[in-house]
Length: 478
Image (cartoon, rainbow, N blue to C red; front, side, top):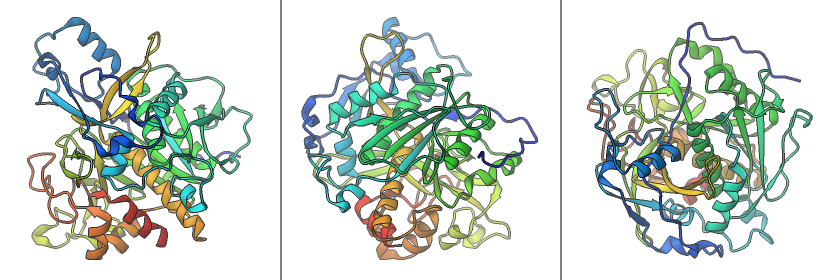
């Protein structure tokens, strides 16, 4: 049984773009300090690495491992053209974080030394019994091998490969114990296909980010990667449709297309009561994009993270993060619990609009997070510092999957529109808000009056970044 048909948009829509950034450097291979699963790196400073001055001229948006290799081979760069995007980095040294360091910085529970023999609560705290659907375009033929390398390097639980084919019975059966990774090629009929999409270097990098960091956040959740045949809005919408048909879970979308009146054609795809939807807020500075602007989608903005083991993290707005007021979507009910910047004279306008972002996470590639990517034909894998709001989307998806697992233990229904408890039950209560979120108050994503962070809700970072243990406890009790 297929999902209901969706009318095509009434106007031409540009393809969606993957919302990732890479620092323009091939990293040193991470040390094996975390390979034993003890997460020792959580107590150490992040790895710092220098970048050649010529590489600073590269724009990090959508930068691929292949482009970095060409830069290293050339040893220099032709002068920038006036129409080229501005460079993203200004410092010649970046830092990059391991999964253990990110877990410590955002106050996630430390991983157990073994993924077996866990109590029900421990397993739920790792996302057991839940599914994360990652919607991407094109194919990454090395996704499973690179995840295995990532897991072995950082001592994360391994994943069993569970193929999805045109004969796989849908909806999917409940997740088995432990992590499984499934890849589904999305056909034109929004059902699994036997034919993989073509390869695209940028989207293959996005897939690596999504899979590796969704797993690092919820290591026992089932991951289902849905590969659309292309980056057209209709093709990605087919993948979202298939995810919802596959069963309950969190749908993560690390891409964006310019908003417009055409969005109403796809609104119904994001209203499934058994699915939560998460999307990156964009990486082009102030502004909003589809699908994160939709009221039923949790929009994830970006920050620059500073953290050294044993100390509290600090964060500022990442200057490239998306965030702004929609020109098409009215303000949803849950945002009435906070003051959305842009309301005239501190009051609400007659037609207040949807504010993006809702929440935030580390997104600056100069304070990036490790990923490993094997490019086609390469003899070895390469390590890179990933950023972009696409880095935060799969991690927030992982946190929502854990919240649903904890709710399941308490006999509660899974989360769907997570903004209701985040805004109305947490942000509206000062003591709860201060425990559940780090309120990011410094920085901007543009020069406009409403592009700046400030106390409480703001457009670049929403409610802020998660103090995960406290936040999960509140979402589990909601």
